[in-house]
Image 1 (cartoon, protein in one colour):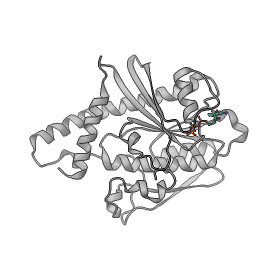
Image 2 (cartoon, rainbow, N blue to C red):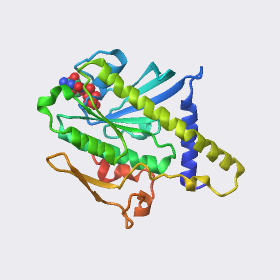
Image 3 (cartoon, protein in one colour):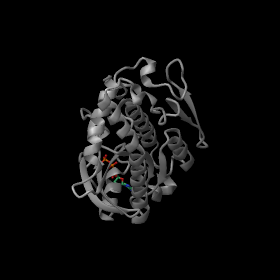
Length: 278
Ligand SMILES: Nc1nc2c(ncn2[C@@H]2O[C@H](COP(=O)(O)OP(=O)(O)OP(=O)(O)O)[C@@H](O)[C@H]2O)c(=O)[nH]1
């Protein structure tokens, strides 16, 4: 088996372990990722307890679980409120999560830029390691602070579109329902993708067991996530344009390997993740 195939198998095993709980309940793991102070903990606590708490230990990284009922399905939701800092390996959540909620604050431009780097890195990670196209959800938080807004809704929406992510604006300080709606949409996205992925996984396993040598995986479209690897430039009106930094082909299907980048995790050391995944 090639390196990519064996990493997919490993991921499949992790996924199978995560898929259903002891009583057949679906399980969904969501990682909240974003710059310090963007509101990851506030959103997590709001969703779990319905309360807004002003101060959290910024060093704290924890995983919470909550039994949920979404679209007539019983689901056990696990939420990892991540805290990236030097020396911490992002694989702890990259491998664990079924869906990634990338948070920025609409009042803090740097958090929006950080969100873009996260979207970029996670997308590349997914393309290189798995056929499961884990949903990305971009969340602009702190909309209660509209008067301090520095990131327009159009910019958020266009960034999300670029990475094929769902997009929401919300506030951990406002009513519970709007926060709950975002989490429910994230859960739905994950369940949809899990359902889409299941037949692919079965076919892959069947193919692997037969050891036919004709890998079904070569036919899987792994290019869905990134429309075009590159940098998005935003103008003051919130419109965006992209400049590709990909290899020679430079097109939407170009993969990082094709650009001479053969390590699965080399993007963690790359420009995009400086100051985040170090
Ligand atoms: N007004 C307002 N304040 C918020 C909101 N979300 C978070 N905050 C505040 O912003 C600050 C940072 O929020 P946290 O939830 O700790 O942010 P974080 O992303 O978890 O930050 P780290 O734990 O440092 O990674 C806290 O003072 C929160 O009370 C929001 O929606 N509206």
